[in-house]
Image 1 (cartoon, rainbow, N blue to C red):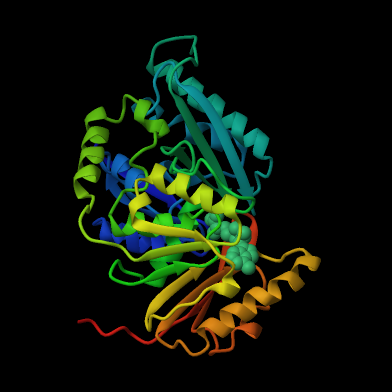
Image 2: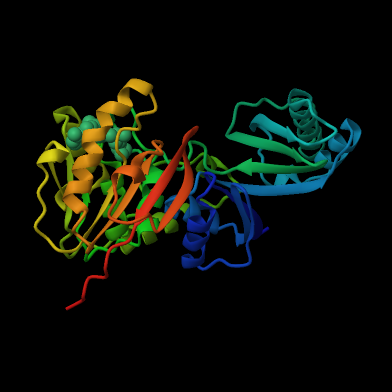
Amino acid sequence: MSKVRLIVLSTFGLEAVIKRELMDLGFNDFVVADGKIEFDAEMKDIPRLNIGLRAADRVLVKVGEFPATDFGQLFDAARALPWEDWLTYDARIEVIGKCVRSQLMSVRSCQSIVKKAVVERLKEKFLTEILPETGPEYTISVALLKDVAQLTLDTSGNGLHKRGYRSAKGDVPLRENLAAALVLLSFWDKERLLIDPMCGSGTILIEAAMIARNIAPGIDREFVSELWPALDSEYWRKARLDAQAAIIREGELKIFGYDIDEERIKDCLINARNAGVAGDIAFAVKDIKDLWIDKQYGIVITNPPYGVKLGSQKELTPVYVSIHNMFKKKTGWSLFVLTADKRFPDFFKRAAPDRVRKLFNGTIEVNYYQYHGEHEPRG
Ligand SMILES: C[S@@+](CC[C@H](N)C(=O)[O-])C[C@H]1O[C@@H](n2cnc3c(N)ncnc32)[C@H](O)[C@@H]1O
């Protein structure tokens, strides 16, 4: 069983970024739907993808897909799948689920039917009446959409945004995979100057430095499927060794992060050190109104306070005015601003945004305003 069908889960709006990452890793022939990208891969790709994907949420194995309009059908088809190829006789099994526009609409019932089917299958295949459920963890998902059930197995465990470096964070930090996506969408490259003038716990800049150094986001964390006997431990070892060998250590980066709050800057220093990029980013306490830039070209990627509460909108006005004053004439600067506050383009009047992308930070709907600057001549 070396071929597998994988589904990479994505936050809504980031499918194209993840598809590009997958293409860079050598995959093709994708089926893309809202929030997921499906494709053929090999077993050895499961560690490589978990360790290497920057913008994705999770990597799932697609175990089966079939029509199911009643519980009998769901049970029989789920029981017919080769669970013993993946699960151990002592597997600790959790089944999660969702039902959308289907005749079977009780998520709870679908979950328990699938669990029963998997247990029956394992009992039969492992010739046992009792499954101790004391071994590795397996989370199976049953997703019903328009009467078609899709059964998957989560290989990631903790979501891929949890890189493990962020021990210190403010109130509203960006998810690490969203921060990485913002950098990838900006097409910033390591030769260019990058600033986040409201950097909070530093997530955008740390992800940028990791991209520049080609540090795989999952290099320092564990994944639930590392404990599965079905996945050769050699695959994990090799994926980690390859990731280590791919790190680019030479060259200097031009990355700067500021925040008005001294505590956040302390967080940044801790997080950057944890991520192995402390030497790549200069952090300092600074109010955006005191920011002064004399360089002709560069990129700003930032996530101002959201101002979702009514009162706080007024407090944001001076922040927007500062951005406008600083960059209105700096046509060599590209600006990328992620905010839930739809008033932002009314304040930044250099030009209309070249593109506005609707994204989600957790459950909060946000817009990513993209203002492209003139190209920097390469010398
Ligand atoms: C939404 S948070 C940024 C979160 C960040 N992207 C992260 O992942 O941690 C906005 C940040 O803007 C900072 N901030 C607010 N007003 C500022 C100002 N006038 N100058 C500089 N930073 C400011 C806040 O202290 C806060 O850390």
